[in-house]
Image (cartoon, rainbow, N blue to C red):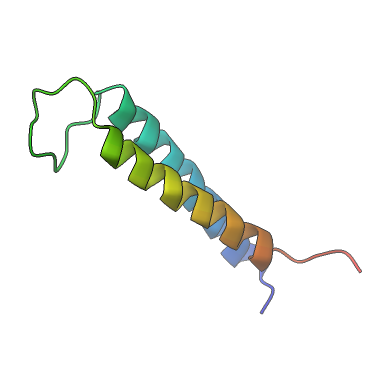
Length: 67
């Protein structure tokens, strides 16, 4: 099923996950971490980076292709 609105949802979700990954990496975001005083949360940044990549891959499959 090729859907333009669905592809844009995946793209937006990928951008949000990418921003959250960067915020976790630089220690700006401190939500749901075991040590809130740690400078960096690399594991959370990696997780959201992988989610961003998966969203961009889903965007690529969901967008309509030119014939």
